[in-house]
Length: 359
Image 1 (cartoon, rainbow, N blue to C red):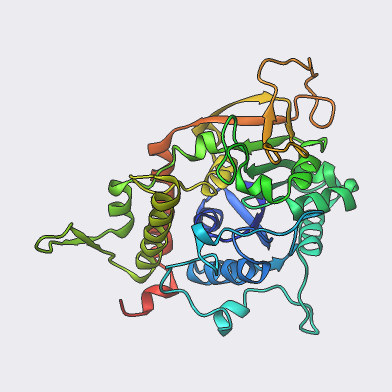
Image 2 (image 1 turned 60 degrees about the vertical axis):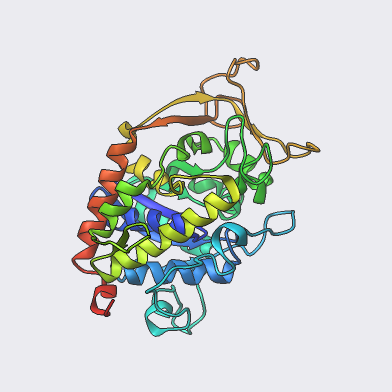
């Protein structure tokens, strides 16, 4: 069993990461902290809560709102990809202020919210039990601000962390600048803090996530659909349940923005789901350890993840500031990944409250 704390900024693909974290049988999800990123911290928090409701997650899995801005830089969002609310075009989820969504936030007895850092610290302590329990994999699908704050404020808990797994970066490519990937560019200083931490770090870069494309056959399986033929038009997929309608609308909007912004013709990449898939089954991936640092001052390259692929620095095999600090994933068994994802959809479909609503 893998004990997981998920830090996310939902975001269309983050929703699929949450689905996997709830339904993969060897993952025990402890909680979800949320962070600025794809949208504002308000929206990422309520989007995580709405997803937990839609997936009928166990009641003890709560949302813990976190950092509203980067450590030192101005905040930036991605409305051109995810819409103003982070889940543009998605249908079927309850409203942000609905009781169903609000019930998913972690609250104290006096009704005040429990923060990301407090929730993360408590969950890791209670799981680790001073060495008598289990280590926790901390998984991030957004900017690394919350994770960096945890590292610098609670170094005594690093022994309780199995690994830091994050979606971010790219080797030789970016998606928000020519050199930088969005999650790293949002808070490059936080990313460097994580990479300098003396704990195993795993990077799921664009080079891999851009292979996890939701092509039409996957979308058809996702919908478990009937196909309606319209004269003069393409075939129209009709999702068979409310859950599948929600997920299909998520993929459709994401596909449209990825085609419009990046020219992806065959579907959108499910970046963030790969983080949870890696923790569950590392054998789906191949990777190699490198020294990785984040460019913090480059005129054209700020936020770039720089991997020392030729070992110019002759680093040792320790994790952290002096060593080969990062396992960089390089390839994915794509078909097997989508089989795993769609199996989780099948199981969620048996219990999702979205299916009680008429299509």
